[in-house]
Length: 234
Image (cartoon, rainbow, N blue to C red; front, side):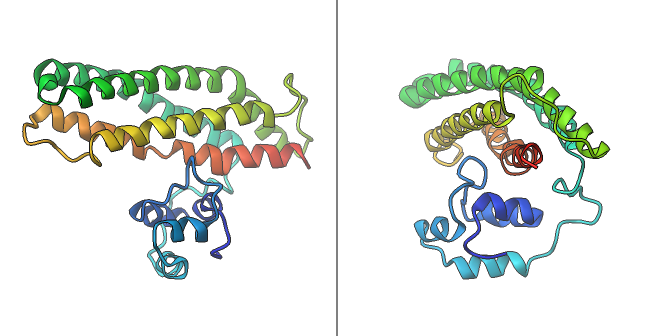
């Protein structure tokens, strides 16, 4: 590992590096193309010190899947079964919590709650469509690429010219979702509970923070998508 790697490359190469990047607020998902050293300096961090911290930390637990080495087909199925299903269940539940909180506490911070409703509603709508497009259009072809890779065959033809074309669309939508999540964090002052927080407010903030922390954007942007493009280009 070197300080000239991008945040995405560092996160993909070292699974246990992720918790350190998160602790320092370094965005390896939507901002993953930024060089690690530049990202550190932008936050007044010493790149060498942070890298040494990562290298000297405890590796990921034994038995944790190395998605860089696992078949593409397995990673695609893991993302759908684990992360997509989580989002499909959690997003409607969060919407209900938000509606309940606004109905009770809305007047206490009207501007913030009104904006949060708009931002979360837009994020949910975009993500639901995004997941559908990935599952119906992109991932079936990535699974075909995975099968070809295991069989030692070249990448099969795709109807959109190159697998990189739909991937570029998905990555752009990831960036937009990241922007919405960043605004949610800002609106909630880094998920700091207000004085009037009841159990539902606590559950809402906890759920929104968990939504932000979901790692499937990292798995797609930094591992699955680059592997699919590299296989096509062989």
